[in-house]
Image (cartoon, rainbow, N blue to C red; front, side, top):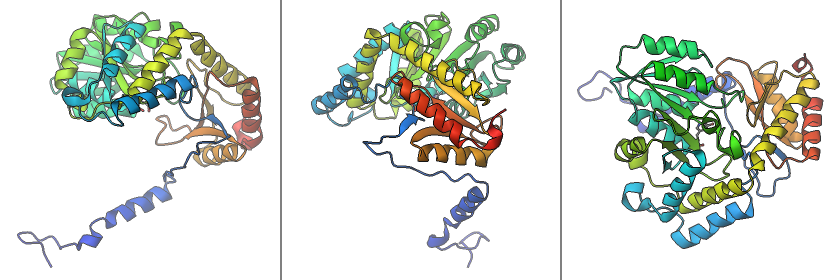
Length: 395
Ligand SMILES: Cc1ncc(COP(=O)(O)O)c(C=O)c1O
C-alpha cells in the first residue's frame, strides 16, 4: 500500500526503526559497539581512566558541600539561569572562578559541552570564519557545525597553518578554536603563538582549558593563565567543572562584554536548566580547596610525568604528558581493547581509544594521573600494564 499523495510504500509502525538494527549490525562488524559498565560505589580497582585529576570528587569538603547545597536549595535548579535557576552559589562560583583564573568575568553552564556549544555559536555565526586545530574536542566541533560559520580545520598544533587560513579567509570576523591540552595524547597547544597569530590577523582566540584547569599554571590556574592570556581582550576560555573540580558543569571565562553577549544570545545557556545547586556548591568547594592546596596541581603533573617516564623505560610508545593525560600506543584497535580489558581484570582501569575516536587512526591506552596516586598505586599500574601488554606493544 502507498502513502496517500506519495508513491512511498507504507511502513507499519513496528518497522519504522528497523534501520537501527542494520546500523547496529554495521557497528558490530566494524567493532564499534560501545558498552555501559556500572561503576560500583565501593570499587577497589585503581582508576586511571576517569578525569578526577585532583582526587576531589570524593573529598568530604567537596562532596559534603554538594550534599548540603541540595538540602538547602533543592535537588534541581528549578529553571534556566535567566528564570529561576541562578542562585547565590552560581554568582559566587562565577566571581571566584574568574578571579582564580585571572579573567574579567565568568559564566557557568550546565556542562563543559554546553559551554563550548554556547561560546562557539554565540561568538561566530554565518558571517564569521572559524579556524580550528583538527584535533579539537567533539563539543567544539559540534559548536562549529551549529554556528554555520565558514570552518577550516588545520594541522595539529600548527600556528603557521592557522595564520595561513586566517589570512586567506573570506569573512571579516574570525575565531580560532583550540583545546589547551588535547584529550587523546595530552599534548599542549602553542597558545602564545596562536595568540600572536590572532592579533596579527584581527581575529579572536577561544581555548578549551578542560584538561588544563587544576593541572597547569600557577596553583592549577590553567594553561591560559600560564600563557599570560587570561585577561587579554581577544581571548576567551572555556572550562569544565567535571574533571579537576570533581563536580559537574562548565564555564566560559573572558572579557565582560563577551559574557554579557553570551547571557543574551548563547542558546545552550538560555534554553537549558541551570547547573544543579549541588554541583555548583561542589565546584565552588573544589576551587577553594585548590586555592588552599596549590601543590595538588604540581603533584598531578609529577605523577603523570613519572607514569609516562617509567612506561617509556619499559619500552612502550608513550606520549610526553603536558598535563595529567598519558597515552600508550597499542599495536591495533583489537589489541587495545583486549589490553584494557586485561588491565581491568587485574584491577587497573585504563581508558582505550581507537578509531574513529582517535583522529590519527592510532589506537592507544589512555591513562589519567591523579594527585592522590600513591607510589604503590604507580608500581601496581606499571606492573599490570607491563604484564598484560600484547607482545608487539613494546619497541
Ligand atoms: C576537551 C574537553 N572539552 C569539553 C569537554 C566536555 O565537558 P563536560 O564533560 O563538562 O561536558 C570535555 C570532557 O568530556 C573535554 O575533554
